[in-house]
Length: 157
Image 1: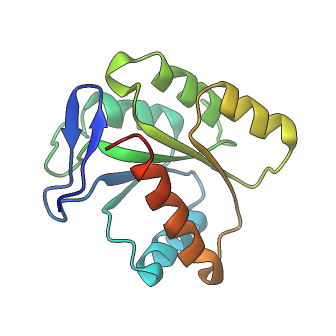
Image 2 (image 1 turned 90 degrees about the horizontal axis):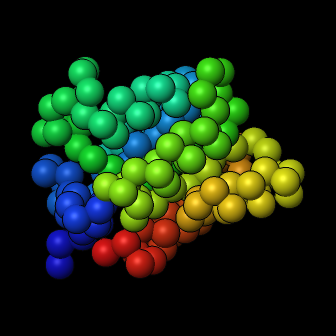
Image 3 (image 1 turned 180 degrees about the vertical axis):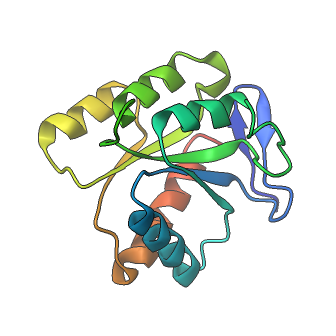
């Protein structure tokens, strides 16, 4: 059975794996490496793309250069979005996403070091599908994998 995610009216799959791609928006390279390694170790078969800023996330979603090749940069079925970034923060990116009709069904999981209740509440109020607290480690990668697969499956297929 092929895994599919709807983004607006588009059905988005990574052409290599047949599974929805994941876009990680994270400005800390160590966290990017840790997330990638955790996914690999947990057997998370989705292609993971990463960008380092909110502005780059929007350019990626819009398909603006250098992200205009959808074979290389497929639309994601899941966005892992860091909250604390310089320039445009994760909340601002989330607001932008939820204002775009073509991304109204995009799964967005906030990925952050903050576990403050006001950040959790704000994320859900703005339309986040999930809120994941860093640091991630290899021990909880399998749990994270199950959570993300659940987020992808929940009303987005």
